[in-house]
Image (cartoon, rainbow, N blue to C red):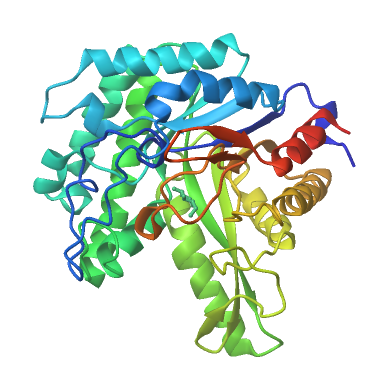
Length: 387
Ligand code: IFM
C-alpha cells in the first residue's frame, strides 16, 4: 500500500521507558517489596544500563532506519526530594535529546511512565488530591529546562496503572480498592490537564497528549448482552479517560496490544490466535478497528507502542508486518496516523514479570550489557525503507 511514505514526514521508531531500561534508579518500585513473598521483585537494578549506553543504543536505532524515538524521563531523578530539583539530571536528559537530534531522531518524551519518587508515594501518590499539583510542578520544571522537544506525552497508560496498582494490587502501592482505583483515574486526568496547560505555556508550539492503552473488544455472535458488555468495556477502558481529557490533548498516543472476545462475562482472547511468550493473543486486525474508532476524536494519532514478548524472535517480523498492514489500511480509509513506535527498542524490565519477557528489537545480555540486533529489527528497517 505504501501510503504513508507519500506523506512529508511519518515517524518510525521504537519506545522505551526510564525505569525499564536505564538502571540505577531509586523510586517507589525499587523500594517496594512484594506483600506476598517479601522479595523485592519490583527492583529493576541495573537493567539494560541505558543511562550510560544511550548513545550506542541510538546509533543502533539510526542504523535500523528509525527517524524518531520515544523515551521517558524519570521523575525521581529530576525531583528526588519534594521541591528539590536536580539540575545534573536535566543535563543528562538534555544530552539524551541532543544525541537523538544529532542522529535525526525526533524525540517523543514521556513525563511519567508508572514510577514515582519515594516522597511522592509517601504523600499518597496519585491517590492524593494534591498529586496534580505536584505533577504540574514537575512538568513545569522539566519543560522550562529541557530544550528541543516538540512532542510530549504526559502520562503512560493511566488505566493500566490504576488497575494494576490500585485495583489488582500487583504493582506498588499494591492497593485493592475500587474506590482508590476510581480516585486515581480521576487524579491522573487532573494531573494531565494541568500539565497540558503548563507545557503549552512553556513551549507554545508543543504537541501534547497521553499514551493510551486501547483494547479491541469484540462481542461474540449476535447476543445483545454481549453487545451491551462490549459497549460498557469500551466506555470504561477505552473512552472514559480520553473523554476526561478532551480539549486537553493535541494528539492521541495509542498503545495497542490486546484483543478481548466478550462472551458473557468471559473476556478472553480468541483461542485460535497465535500468542506471544506471555500468552497474549496476537490480533493485528484489531489495530485497524481501534484506529477506525479513534477517528471520531478528530486528532492526529501516533501509535506510541505495539509489540510482543518473543525471546526467540520467531513471530516479531510477521507481527510488525501485519500490524503495519492494518495501520496502512486504516490510513487509506481516513485515520490520521502519523507515526509508529515499536515496543521496545531494547529488551528491558517488564514490571511485575521481571526480565524474562523479551520485547526488544535488540537483545540485551544483562551480564555483559552486550546488544545484539534481532532479525526482526532488519525486517522493520526494510518496511521503513519501503522495501
Ligand atoms: O512494558 C510495557 C510498557 O511499560 C507499557 N506498555 C506495555 C508494555 C508491555 O507490557
